[in-house]
Image (cartoon, rainbow, N blue to C red; front, top):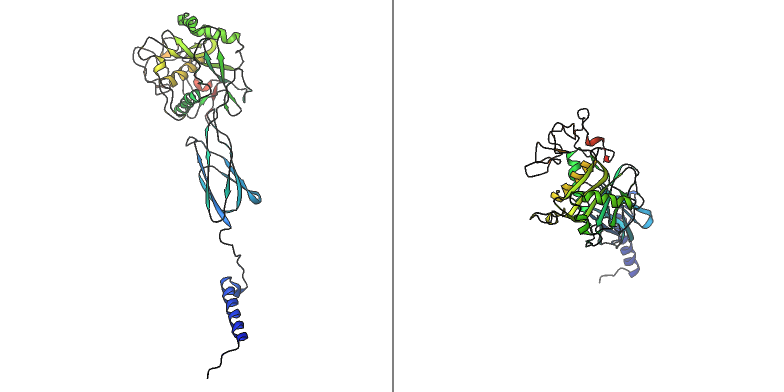
Length: 367
C-alpha cells in the first residue's frame, strides 16, 4: 500500500517551485534587478510632417505627460511614450518671405497601440486688409497690392493664395539663379502683407490713358498714401492695358516707385495676359505671368542701366531672348538671369557704372 504525502508538504513544495521560477525570470539569483514593465503600459505616436517645400525645415514641438517634450523636423515615430494626451504644435516656417503655418492638434496615446498625428502645413494667408499692416522689417522691401478699378470684378487673389503662389515661384527661381539671393517682400505676422486697393477710376478710364496707365495708377496710389520710404510697390492690377502685361518706373528716365502687372492686359491679343496662368503651386517653375513680375521689379531697381554692354530698348538687353531682361524682335523665353553676367547681375561685381542686382537695397543677400 502506497502512502500519500501529507497535503501540507505538497503545498510547500509547489510554493518553493513557484518562487524559484519567479526568481529566475526576474534575474534574482545573482542580486541584479530588472523592472517588470506591464504589458501595454506605453504606446507609439507617429508624427507626420507635410505641406512644406522639401528644402524648408519644420520645427514641430510635441509635449505630453510627465514633462515630455520633443522637437521633430520631419516625419518621425516616437516610441515608448507614456499613456496620455500629447499636444503637437508646429512652429511657423518661412520660405523666402513666403509664410507657412499648421494648426496645433492633440493626440491620445494608448497602451500597446500606435496613433498618428499630422502636422499639415499650408500657406499662411492673412485676412483681407485695405490698409498697411505692421511690417516685420524696416529694411528695403517690396509691398504687394491687389488693385481693382472702381468697377472691377474682385477675384480675391490677395486672400486665396494666387499671389502667394506666383511670388513663391519667382522667388525660388530667382534664388536658384543668383546663389541664394531673392527679393525682400513686406511680411506681417508671418505672412505676405498684400493690401487690397479699390481704385477711384473705372477700367475704361484707366484704359483710356493708353500707354500712361501705369502713371495714372501711381498717381492715384500716391494720393491714397502709398508713399512709404524704403518701399517699392508691386501692384497686381485686375484691369486692362492696351498692349502689355506689365510696366514699371525706372530711374533716372522715369522716376517712380510702382511696378504693375496687368492681369487683363492686351485684351485684343489671342494670347492676352488674362490667358496666362499663375504658378499652380508655390514650388512650380515660373511661367510667363510669374516672370513678368520679376522683370518689372528689376526695372524698378534701375536695371538694366544704360552703361551695360548689351543695353537695348531703354532698360533691357538685346542679346539673348532667354534673358530675364530681354526685349527685341525674338520671342521672349526667360530662363536665365543675365546670360553673359555682364549686364546687370554678377556676384563678383560689374564694370564701373553698370548697376548690379546684388547691390539693390531690396535684395536679401546670399546666405
